[in-house]
Amino acid sequence: MDRDCRTSCSILVSGGEGILRVASYDIQFQKGLSLREFNGTYGSEDQCAEAICKARWPDGFVCPECGSTRHCRLGRGLFQCQDCRHQTSPTAGTIFQDTKLPLTVWFLAMHLLTQGKHSVSALELKRQLGVCYDTAWSMKQKILQVMTEREEGRVLSGRVEVDDAYVGGEQHEGKRGRGAAGKTPFVVAVETDPEVPERVLYLKMKTLEHVSSEELEPWFRKSIIEGSLVLTDGWKAYNFLEDGWEHDAQKSPGGWKSAKVAAFRWVNTVLGNLKCNIKGVTRWVGRAHLDRYLAEFQYRFNRRFDMKSILPRLLTTAVRTPAMPQALLKLAWMDKTA
Ligand SMILES: [Zn+2]
Image 1 (cartoon, rainbow, N blue to C red):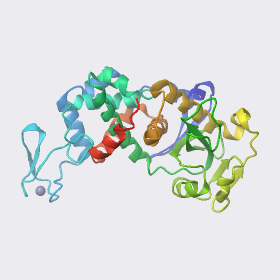
Image 2: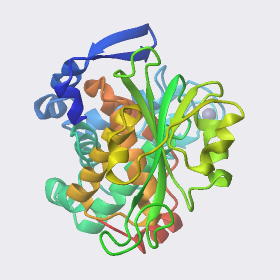
Image 3: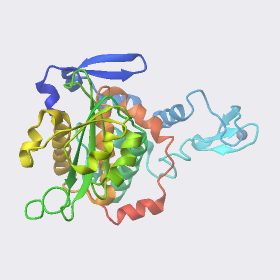
Image 4: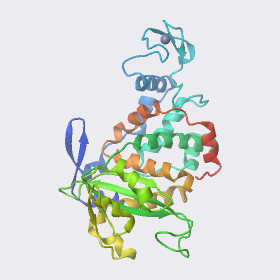
């Protein structure tokens, strides 16, 4: 985040080996996966196909029909089980299923969508990948679907700043704030270290029909561990938090002054960056796509501690995500944006 580089705070990262302290300066200036390294690792069809096999079967091929590991390799990358003779394509049942594009194009799309601080529009992908706009748009939607499914199960805890915000609709003349016509509301939750609120950890967001307790409560129950300290403004829809969480309802001064309340420093910083990202990259996001765009932003934010591993980790999820049904993609296409 922009604010990271102006502060000298450190950030706690929960990992397999426990808790690490990472200076926010180091997050900004860490080495990512350079284009040269990317080309060296994923520059050929064989390298990409092997990377998919390794992500899908880290301990070696397992027949999806009978579970046998005895196999031989056929042409076109197919595996044949030596017990039941079933043939399996490494891309079957993944987001790459039935693709007519070289895998190198898919990998480059995933690289471009994960290494930058900001998103990449379908139009920019089209230019960078040398494919037609429709193809770039479909690829982007499928990759965003992977990010959405990966972030679905994220749970926050500790100290969590919450706010709701809006995209779309009238920017200047329409009614502003809650209930504004044509705007899509969404809720934003940012987890910070309970001891040191300057240490921001993870982010979770969700679009809503209305900012009501009926919609918010089920999402909170599965997204924020009960007992956590949750800071909100005084909006009545958050009153359900009294039952299960430590609820700190801050009195909001209203209008632009609300963005200056210290308790909501991080949620406001995230919101500012998100809005810049949407305006700068896609200009506009329709309601039908907003959840996927939010998940994309969230995915990159929550993995900003380790840019080098972000592509292999995305690949691990991509081979476990079924191909997006064509009907769903067509439905999305009808409401497409950049
Ligand atoms: Zn088999």
